Length: 225
Image (tube, rainbow, N blue to C red; front, side, top):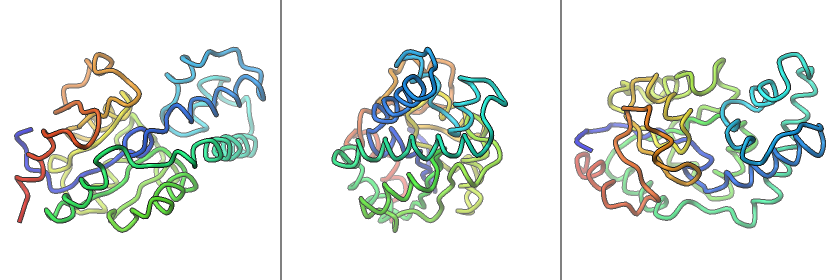
């Protein structure tokens, strides 16, 4: 990791909290039991990127639901997810210390997520970590979600940092692709996907299981005051 980042951009779900299995279960329940789709748990996992309405359109086709229906389905899915996950809500191991170390090193931080504000606020406020982030880009703040680069480009612009001086933290191939399209190097959390699922992305600088990984110290030491 021979780079000197001035900013860290974090995806949220699966990257800061290990909650993707709960999203997977909530979506599978909605899609199969409520909406009658014939789709496996593993197939749902592969569709969980981008905005909620994008997922619905990938599964059912564009125009199958009205915008109002998709909004209602999205909110119901998030209520189910939050209800199931809240008692498990916690930062991925080492992240609390890593955020504080990054702050002390003068590294700016932002969240760039395809989640809606309802879910982002659920995490930031229940875990009391909002103060670390100078920018938050949600699904509602972009026209084109991941793997388009808009989420991360917008986060960097708000921070006033060039893309090449940012490091993205992601857990999903489409998120890594978004970072690549934004011209940003990426650290991958292997919470939901294995390393061999990311072979197409040359912008990856490290794979980590959690934020206790000793390799992350080089990103901080190069920027310590």
